[in-house]
Image (tube, rainbow, N blue to C red; front, side, top):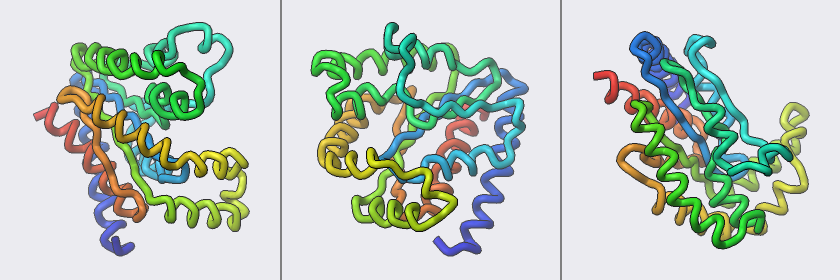
Length: 225
């Protein structure tokens, strides 16, 4: 996507999302957006564009680090139930409850029985959110293995982005096929009418950011009409 076209679309979509979130706030309509994807897929950049023109009082961004000792002692969904948005608010998850069927499955942090059972648990969790009237959507930003490596090297060369890189990033690349298989299973088994997946091609960052904004705007507009 050319920069001029990208800038025009981003400005238009951010203004539209700002209006939609204000209307949602006035009507008490809550929204949950979960962003997933490989390392360096561009989730952070997409989130920054989502929040560009939203009233700070109307949204929260929740990064999802490794669970704490307290969180490990409870059901894995407990820490996400605690972040359910208030009426009229938008909650954006930078990685989410899908860690159970992605990283925990691939790394062996969950047993085969635990991650296999999680598909139905997650579907039920999202159904409960939707039953309260929430908008629930999930975005998978997909990038190629070659593009990921290019972004890793670009980060290493940038003094402003070098801190993002760890040895874990390259270690995770060695399990690319396992992660891809887990992602395919995840999308196939948890794509539902009340909580659909939106798969976005992410090799072009500009295109991906526009696509994520469009998906969220469309979901809100459909509910508010």
